[in-house]
Length: 386
Image (cartoon, rainbow, N blue to C red; front, side):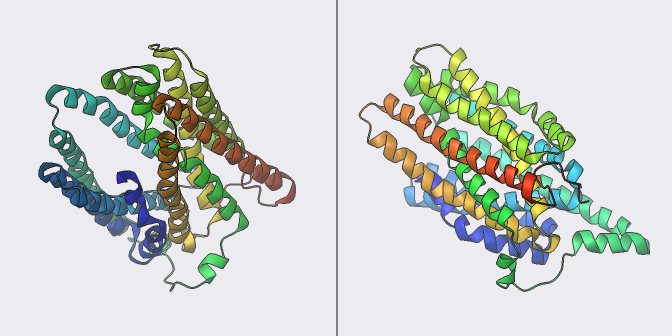
């Protein structure tokens, strides 16, 4: 429930948030949504002290609003500041930072909980991370504001600044939706299927390894976090390769193959108490994830026009949050309907593997269509649009 309530409002709110960002600017929005995240986690932290379940749900709800809208803002900022030939690398650095933070938490929290068995202390660490995040957003606001003033020193730079910072002032109409291409809708479905496996699956990763392979929570935390952290360090390389190869469809398909392998390989493991095989599956999934994230947002910016960028990314994020709302319930249903919890996690791998196969079918067909029927060649090495 904690995971689902995180996503409920964002199914619709991210569309509005994207339009909101287009209207008031990414810079202020970034600071605002980082602040919302900090407030939401603070409420969640207080709920652990008071042992108030309703308050905890409210905190997660507020945190989810800030987190997903902040993500829309981040990728919009990348789309504004970086050219297409630089975008995958820039996105990859952002993803690397995010995954290092997640892996650090997966590694630290079980160790801390083992020491004192105190949930509020664990959540208080999150408060420190989010407060630092908010200060970083404020620093970005100041630096970006200063850079904008420098850009406006002469006429040519002023024109460039207006193009970058002041997107067309439009009221929302149905034309925003009608202007979205077929590429956008198929890429959104592809993303939806992937996110049905990513975050809900990652949320259960430690429990899956602990239950199926008979490790302690601390051992499972290390098995999950260390391979993900190691693969995360290579994220900029994957982003650079995506920019260098300039074939987004090929790169997304390769990443999808790693994801498919990871799920079916994890399902096939029978050995207990052997950390190597689960670690290989976790690492392969991490490789597929960074290939996916480093290429999906550059692909989105290529199929969206600049005046519709915030709305389009917001709508895509709504698809993502639909998956966050639906998939945890599906995974919970699979585990609940299986008498053996370890066996339930086996079927979770099968479920995620099937969704990943559907996803690679979609991106493969879309890439082939783009290759033989499209002038733009968005997924097959078409010219960069700077």
